[in-house]
Length: 375
Length: 245
Ligand SMILES: Nc1ncnc2c1ncn2[C@@H]1O[C@H](COP(=O)(O)OP(=O)(O)OP(=O)(O)O)[C@@H](O)[C@H]1O
Ligand SMILES: [Mg+2]
Image 1 (spheres, helix red, strand yellow):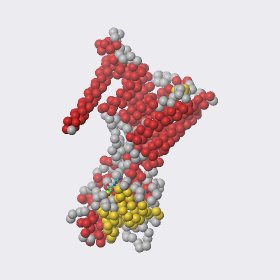
Image 2 (cartoon, helix red, strand yellow; image 1 turned 90 degrees about the vertical axis):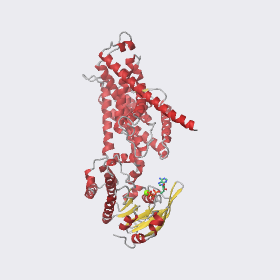
Image 3 (cartoon, chains in turn red, green; image 1 turned 60 degrees about the horizontal axis):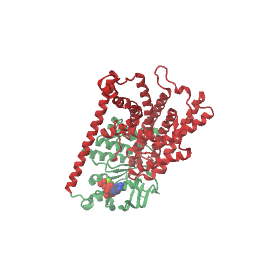
Image 4 (spheres, chains in turn purple, yellow; image 1 turned 180 degrees about the vertical axis):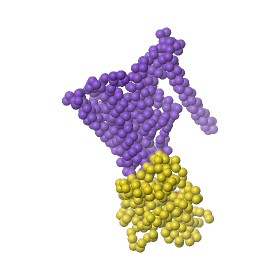
């Protein structure tokens, strides 16, 4: 018995040692890569580059390439941030990760496809008519995604209130499959294409060289985030949400209707995912029933990076993750001469998740959990 | 101000039983609080005092019996219904929203009100009562000292414009010097015409300002008398409060 106890104790320290080695190896690898990257930017024909890339040495990146990658990264990251807000808000009030939140985003992208196709058939998806058409499309997407989130709460999660957190979490995975399969049943398994964007969206800004549609995505995401910030920090309902997130019993003592406030939290998170969904559709012009999966998981990563429950952190986490995903392959992997690095962005994104969990599990921007202990 | 004969109680328990799961906490409890009274509930640890307050407010549902507010049975009404009608509480350990600012905590106390001017006036009243609170309005409530937190907790409850204020161990965790000030504050609030129902471990202090009191022992009311009579009862502390002196 004592032997067993000792073995268990020893095992624990071995795990600790293993984790420490893992941290050191990962950070060391990244540090070496970055040094190699900087070196090859200065002198593409340095010995390390010649060792990894062969005699012709590495290639230097131009400023335009950087800028392109960064804008791509930030525009995708802004969408991750919008989705991440929903994970974070629901975690804030209910203490569980709603893994079906990615589907709320997908449902919005699908709505965008349906509505934009209709507008396109009527000749509204170009010229001056595009503006009212896109506003109506965004509104419908937000309405559908908000309703999806609210119905999800009502049907699947409300009755689980008060049960151990693992139960709604596993339920949310079920809800996620349900929505994915329901969409496939109704719309079929193939990818659906959005109509072509108006030409001006596909152009680049004259001297900055930034693609207009990416800039639009960043601006709309920023407006949505600012609106959310105002709502949460400055309105009475937002105050009630923060109170419910912190202490439900005392919130009800203030006269706050806790159930209604939770519904509103789902609604607001759903609306943000709705904005992200239509932006995604306009940017990539394609949607399939599994569209919510990767962005959903990455937004979850963004929420973890920012510290789950922390809204500013979720936004910052999203943008950082988008940037890391866009630049990481070239700055970390390319110096080693790994071929086809730009296809490894997903790997980079999840490495970021693992790294954050290894080094600072509470998130880079500090943790804000409720007064109850959270597992 | 003490009770007028013949008036209806503001809050009342009629044969209340409360359970947590299978555990029977309150057993056939009867009590009544009249407008403008200052009454206290005494009892040892785990005797069910906090449960009594939570049941009065609907934060815990009784398994049988009636909770009566202004003559109306409110068993099925939510907490907000009772708060709107003038019942509120300073909870055990104050329970401020630590991540919210002092100002936001106070505003949440007035959550169900929408008379802007009245709310402003009440804020001013609370600032004159607790000048320190005004200095700390933008500070996060979690960073306040214990005494300051007590002031904000009282202020938050007063922002609801209560007719009856339930207080769960208001002197807990305060330095001895502050306990005295705190009791004076409670009397001051009472003088404004607010009924007070106070749970206290500090029997002497509580009874010295109260009109009446109940003693709860393992969920049963074992004594129900005027404060003077309870103070004079030699067995009170030894038999019921589980205190040695
Ligand atoms: N939410 C709960 N679930 C289960 N049991 C509870 C709950 N709240 C209180 N109890 C139990 O009910 C009993 C009475 O609790 P209560 O808080 O009413 O006591 P109290 O008289 O206020 O004690 P104290 O003086 O220590 O504050 C205790 O045994 C406590 O453990
Ligand atoms: Mg108690």
